[in-house]
Length: 233
Image (tube, rainbow, N blue to C red; front, side, top):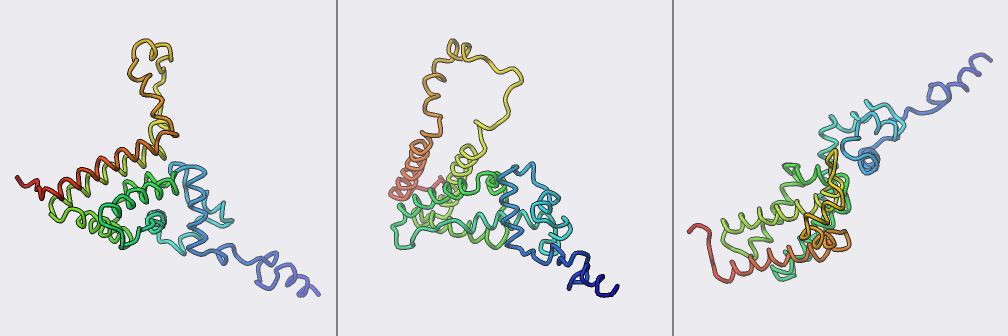
């Protein structure tokens, strides 16, 4: 009878209470989903494998059965965000396709707002990352066949898209403030241009501002392609 009571208490797994170890239910997919939720809830600065383990109901060390370390997990999250990028059809003409790519990048940034600062600054030197870069370069070269000029425009587009993504998801409005910020009265009195412009800085105006930047950049690419101009001169 003692043996029977003991086995009931321990359960079929042979462990107290009959519960399987938490890590038995873990998978890369489940860990990544929980990690994305944690980043969204607490930001990159608040992320830790200890908190992730608590969210998953396991010890932090159990996560390392699926990821070699925290850095590998973060790489996987970046790859996940990049892999969600929605590529427009190859059948589109080069310039409209590049326009669609720029909008798709912005959509990806907004899909992962708390993670995007890591995506933006990651070197993207994983297989997923370099394939993504290759695809964007091919799209730019389809508009501007000159390889040097295409490379420079690729960088210019990156400056704009990364900057816009960071500003809209984690930028100025969420940034640190001065310890003693100036008053609204001071701004109204001393900064009339800022007062007039500030209405256009609000989130409701972001779409039109983004469009202005996209069309300005595409016009520059289109002009370079039509003129056959090279920066080598």
